[in-house]
Image (tube, rainbow, N blue to C red; front, top):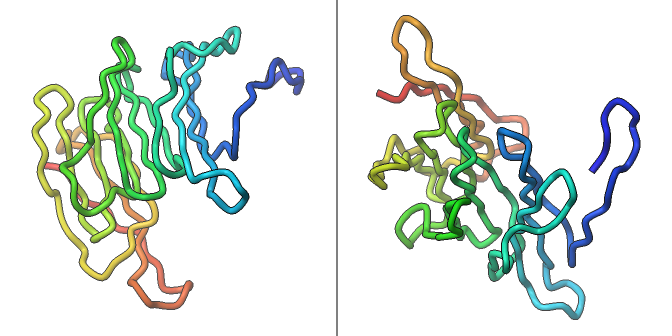
Length: 193
């Protein structure tokens, strides 16, 4: 952790393997990390999500959230009540930060590649490897497919705010047609109704 104004390192938090993702809770009290070992060395493939208090670096979870391969993305929702994480094999978990209860973001099947919370923290979008984008309503656990782009790799996902005319949030995705040259990418916007 660094102090921005001084550009000085405050503390170092050790991890086994690479740290691939870091994020602060919206109130700044917690720091979540996603890490893992790729299995290239003698270490077995594994991944972890760890949560620390940002003021003193003490780990708050009694045991790490374990995955079978490296964790690539971690994100808190706006209230800090939920922490979502995605591993290289497409396993995606949603964890309540108050009690540590964890569950799959979507039903098993095609792996999850990207996640993003809506600005109000009530929705979670998830991109699957088959080119579909799913929405999960956090309070009701309802899940539905927003749209699908077959033969498309969705490499980026972000929520945007609603506007005064419509009031519903936008989702932006970065896409590339599977098998196409690196220069043939696009950005698409979709409104959630």
